[in-house]
Length: 294
Image (cartoon, rainbow, N blue to C red; front, side, top):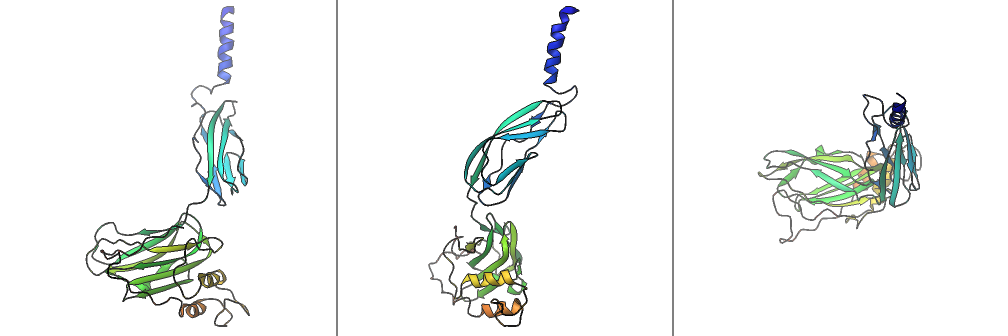
């Protein structure tokens, strides 16, 4: 029996580095990190499974300024761009450990875009156009699109923000919509509008869009307007306020709201230009122009 002692001791030592009988081996479930964007809130949970709970996590390597790691969670608002190599280690209650190399990439946020949801097949009756602000945060946007063979229900527009101005010219079939938000938004539905085709068609729309970033700066050349977008943005940010001598209280009734929006709307949209016959966008339900990228 004495000759078996070295083997028994070796097996015992190996068992101290592994999990008990019937337990799954310890492993990290995180094999990569989602990308982070400069100046935008970030959160990533790094988990493990198997072994003996509870787990303890450590993360070695330089984190970008603004991010912290605690309890298996990486969070914060990154303040610098770059690629950051990291080493994640998990240890369970039985002192088993596993490690995984990860890379965190911080880059500029993607530009905002107005994503349109349209029927994918031919339609003969009314349908809803849904538009979402996606990607980067924005405090508002300007949009214009020519509607060929589509009639909009302007009175039925459902908008995320009350601070919006809508215009439609039947002669040129140009639809224009400017919308401002009280706070920056992203990944939200901006509006929905009922459209009625004048003949069976497959809806295709390519609006011109200019977004305004969190500081209210245009991400591109502003669309032609007789008044600056900043006036609409100030209304959105002051919407519902009451008091004396409010700059946004255009009608002087002591409250910022619909009445002030109606005053701003007067002369806001210039007379649209008549498109030339050879201008693009004459297809079924298709608009001229393309979405602008900042």
